[in-house]
Amino acid sequence: MAGRQIYNPDGFKNIYEDGKITGYQFQFKAQYYRGITLSIVRDIEIFTDGKEVKREDIRFAVNGETFTLEEMRTVVDSDYRWEFGDFATVSVMKEGGLTNGKHHISAKQILAPSYMPFQLEKMCEADFEI
Image (cartoon, rainbow, N blue to C red; front, side):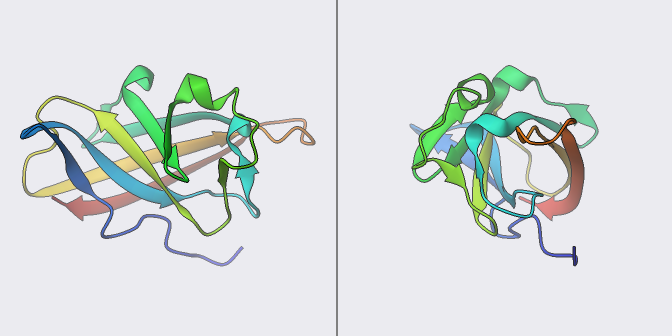
């Protein structure tokens, strides 16, 4: 497959709720050759500035709905697909979010299509600025 932009360069930002920073988010595309149901996403592993993000602190949003990674495993509704080429928004719940300045992210997508005898794992990295 030809190389393509995985992360949305404008998608990195802190999350504000009631005037407080409660986390940060980024947007990226699925590393698969077609659209997928959320139930085949087995995991998203994130390292920001070399620090691992706890699985329970990750939220995934597509088509206006937000899910935990555990909830995604049970979503079979075709209204909540991660379509090829579409950015999904991934939020990390972290009080205070990220400091202003430069950061590095590594995010691994782990997918398990039912017709494949193994999981697909793809790491994607980027430098960004808040």
